[in-house]
Image 1 (tube, rainbow, N blue to C red):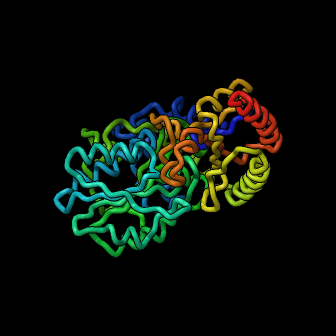
Image 2 (cartoon, rainbow, N blue to C red):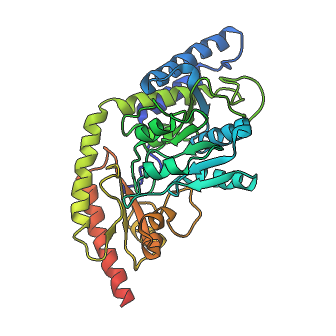
Length: 375
């Protein structure tokens, strides 16, 4: 098997799984209970939260646990818009966002909010001058992902946030799902940030929303206090501890792991660029973990399943998308054929050159096969 879909989800690190198993077996108390079992559970939860906050360089009080990045995105965007809508109903995003952001914006649009999409340069990066011109008196929220999940384009979140900090009434949210665990992140000018454990070798169903302490949200789930007033429910202690462990492990040796992925990326792209009929959609602003390509005469799903027959696994668009073409690729290239045929190859420090070579051999055969079918 050759797994090249790490940006969709990563295999669980065995040490993370071991920590989860120990917690669910040995800490049976509810962290909100007042008895000894509850107190012991809360101590462990607080220690895990402190570790997460230390790694992210934020306060433990700014951590909200969620079921994943989709919930975190919904919580941040809806929470801000519903809580502060008296300030204005103009919100800004990009066409490169994850579906959990874009669909939330469409929902808010149905409720009377006005949505604008930031202009992108030819590399898919947000144009800061254009963004500044879009800001209105009633602009309430800007949501821009740090890294696009399909092409891997990295935005300058620091400079975008610095610009938005000049407008005290505007909140800045960033979906950092594809950044956390792969690169250092700077939350200096970010008000809210979403992340998911499954992207850095943690467990599925576990996410975090970072929220600047003084900001209030309208909760999506009402009930008791739990770990925070903004998200009710019994704290999932095992998942919290596992998130903390996965986050710590992902940043251990981060620089070396990134250099390793960069080397694999350069090798991969050099080989792919020599295959006739293949377009490379990722560019110099893409993180090395993601390589997006198109073979215009082969639909993405067809190529995906052809590779799957050889136990090679990649993605056609993001796993959560329901569209039959990549809106991201179309937004960047304006080419519908490339948008319909784009596949995402995502790498890890676990990826080997042998796996890449096997992919390339099979991929070239499939391209040639489909080219002959086309005639």
